[in-house]
Amino acid sequence: MRRKRLFWQLFPTFIIIAVVSLIAVIWFASTSFKSFYIDQTRKDLISHAFLIENKFRNLMLRGDTEEIDSVCQMLGTKSSTRITAINVSGKVLGDTEEYPASMDNHNDRPEVIEARKGTVGSSIRYSHTLRQEMLYVAIPVELPDGNQAILRMSLSLSSIGDALWSINTRIIIGGLVIVAIIILVSLFMTIRISKPLEEIKRGSERFARGDFSQKIQVFDPLEFSRLADSMNQMAHELDKRIKAIISQRNEQEAVLASMVEGVLAVDMEERIIGHNRAARELLGISSKDSERRILHEVVRNIDLQRFVARVLSTRESAEEEIVLRDTHEKYIQVHGTVLRDATGEGIGALVVLNDVTRLHRLEAIRRDFVANVSHELKTPVTSIKGFVETLLDGAMNEPESARRFLEVISRQADRLNAIIEDLLTLSRMEQDSGRTKISLRMEPLNTVLKTAIQVCELKAQESNIRIKLSCAEDLKAKMNAPLLEQAIINLIDNAIKYSESESVVAISGSQENGEIIIKVTDRGPGIAKEHLSRLFERFYLVDKARSRKLGGTGLGLAIVKHISQAHGGYPEVESTPGKGSTFSIHLPADN
Ligand code: ADP
Image 1 (tube, rainbow, N blue to C red):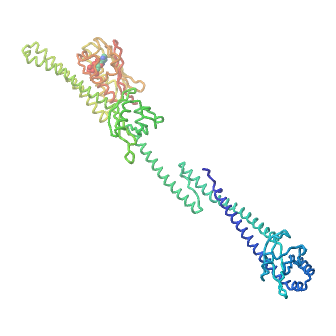
Image 2 (image 1 turned 60 degrees about the vertical axis):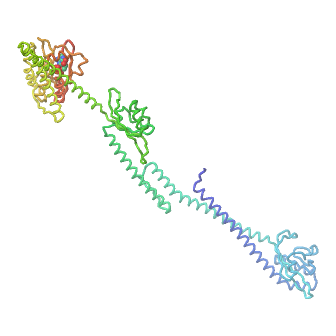
Image 3 (image 1 turned 180 degrees about the vertical axis):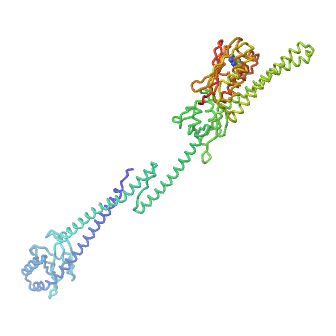
């Protein structure tokens, strides 16, 4: 549809009204003027005719036709009127314009016919004689002999035409002036109307862009100012609501962003409609290219896809554990619910993802631990039970065997004791580190190392093993002395245990790169590379038979690890099979 500007809507209407009224005025004015003029002229002609009636009556009585004609010419010329004298039979006796003899009988003329009836006759018609529109007036002239002559006065109407033309010209000029004024007025009105409209349009465009800072300023006309007020009010409401929505959205985003659980929302077509930071990290997706994309294009995990599809199709909440395989395996607990709109219609699904990998690991550790403890305890208990039964079965009576069996029972009881001691140490450590931090004090490292060596001295001498110590006297570390001593004893004990006799165990304390490092180096059998990463786990034994024979519980290094960590440090091992091992404890050096 072609759209017109306001000016073109108003302007033609004004022009049509002006032109129609102008035509009406011209028509009314000219017809009124014409009839008024003719009326006046007719009255004039009648009174002129009555004025000269007597003169003609006398001339007609005398029958002097020449005199009649000359009087007609003389009076007619003077009064600019055509005078015609007609006798009883209709013959023209005198005429201002023509020669009477050449004129035909005038009894058939309408004004003459009327006058013959004794009244004043008049008519307007075209004169073939003068070739123009004429007004005729005829009066009867009663003669004393009872006959009736007719005196006719006539005037050309062409002068009316001229007068009418001049009046009409003036009216038309006036009309054109009015049209010009109308054009100007409509232009002015259009501007007056369209200016506030333009302001309202600009304001509404600003509002549409979301800029509510500026109000629409329109003061008149009243209707437009009310419209502007309503729009300003609407913009104010809109602004308020948008701000409320934004603040709500920000709050929701803040809540979602700070959630540890991953949150992922999809629509019914499995298109991603939202996710929080935790979900992105868990699923390894970037925020930019995942919005509005189909889930399986973004997350390539068949279990999660099936889970979401199931929630969407059954429209029921569901819970499941899925495994994400990235660089490491991640166990994710997923909880899905149907997203519903205000009418309760399902519009998608919300999936909450919980990383339970740590729980899984802890559970696995706990299971292993229980199994290991049971196994480790079972071996000495079975052994003790076996020997006790043998003794009861009669071996008691053979002093030689009885002594040997009791020695074995005693060794196994020692072993049980060692395991229980180590377990208690570990559990105490875990409880302490779980609850409060252990108390640390700045103490000389040399002293602790020396005490630990003293504890192990006897055992070293048994195998003729020499212990070397190198540590600066003034080297101090923040420590819990009894605990650190326990850890160092464990390391020295192992070094002695796994070294050949006549060997050397070197112990050193030093400060390097902001760390206090305690090293225990032996020249024992060393440990194969594949065991190194698991060495500090509880009950981890490299060579089970040998370790057990040597009284190992598999808990010594786990205790070392715990004590190191309780000091804010960590343990480390370097080993070359066949050459020996170096176990070290790294502590932070707080200067
Ligand atoms: P254990 O009480 O049996 O010594 P640990 O936890 O202290 O238990 O040690 C775990 C395992 O690490 C041992 O079974 C042993 O095989 C190995 N190991 C520990 N220290 C040494 C070492 N100095 N040389 C060789 N192997 C060692």
